[in-house]
Image: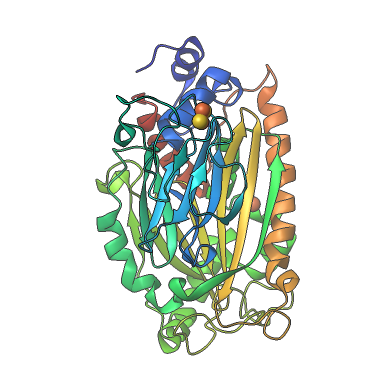
Length: 402
Ligand code: FES
Ligand SMILES: [Fe+2]
């Protein structure tokens, strides 16, 4: 484990079953470690294949100190390269998205192929071997159209979990989706507070009026009561009702988590919309609305909520020690036509208002945690997922809890 004074203080103060100590959210040294050990070493959901349909199409995914170029190469494969020039380190690609024949560094014009290979160092002499100076690759997995990347060679082994998940998500037709709307909600808080907030629904009843009106998850007894009828409807609509939870407690490697569970909306809600009525055509092969919502997790940092007619993807991207972007992506069936079949504002309504609430409560959370009077308090039973997140996190940064 790295010997960092702040980390040592934090770990000495950590007690299982309690929130993490203050330094975990206030120390720049711990934040730097988070980028290196957690974000650079885990699978990150960066987008969907529909965003880069043609060879040369690319977009950037930025987090912490890092930037990654995600592109489609000439052979049609999705590739990811660390956006750091192998000459003297400049960002190679500075446009957020576009189409390129090659990537030309804006500094001294080293030119990289879509595959990442260096085309030839300009005026570098006869001994120079361009083969050694290609862009550093990031690993890529495409799961049913969803693009995941990992900057580390030693990425968590996700494939076996994805195999288990594949038949469950298949009816939703992830591959045949497109982005209907995106939004980013910057919050002045450490990324871990944003993730923790997403992982628990203890706050849903007091903090999310609109969500609480339609989703049963805030009250475990409601879930139990409504579940059997929803499961009957789910089966009839072509959805499996299995639950999958592969995590460290189940013996899976850290960061290889896979989660799938469908839970009921309240009566009168076919989907997560303002009125409860559909906001887009049915996804994939579904034949009807079952009034459910599925929580899906790919790895430890990528979250999805799948209704019968749209999908909401969530990630909490670190920008600085206490700067995080809550990035939300709304997706619908690829054949749905904007204006005719859906209005992006209607599709996005619920998780727009809910994310605004989250921005506010996470911001206040960080303000209180910054206080010298903050002492980590006990977690509630409804916050059990936070405990799993801590186990993962502490493992990743090399600390053995307890
Ligand atoms: S830093 Fe990229 S060509 Fe010099
Ligand atoms: Fe929330």
